[in-house]
Image (tube, rainbow, N blue to C red; front, side):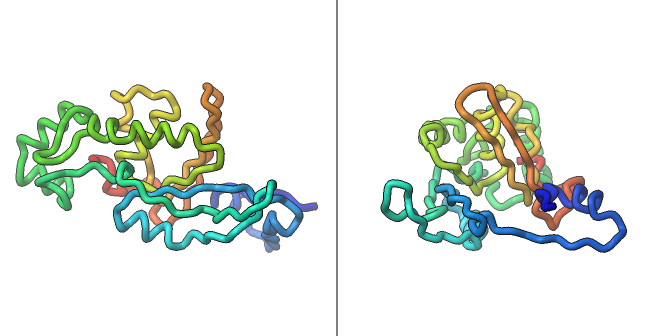
Length: 208
């Protein structure tokens, strides 16, 4: 009797135990399932596009006829990470050493603080508005490859979390967060950890 594979590595180890085991991985397409049309969005920054390079784009046939390029890559500058202006490219510790007053101001008001010649969380909220309206009207599953600060705001928007709380939301690296959202309060969320960094380690993103 076949069973669905465990979602996490810990679940897999728990099921397997210490004895020998045979895992049979079955492609859903091979058992008659129809492929689901899906979309792919990334920011305009290189690191998200490098991640997207490994996603395939097969052509599938639409139910009513005609081709669909699966996970067709769309690039949106509105999804770019917060721009740190004069501090772009520096770590938070480097900012604290070079400009302790700026670091103190940001610590007091992370939501409203704007980097010198850069952006604040409010600026990201403004530029995300149009993108989120488009996402809401998208009928197909949508994969967004983006950045810590932007994902916090996207996640908060979908979950109805106040923006004052959004700046501290944990968005771990190497993780796919799946949210089934129908525009109401009915949410289903699953997180898929892809590795290699362990989740309990500091990923260097907490201060963004």
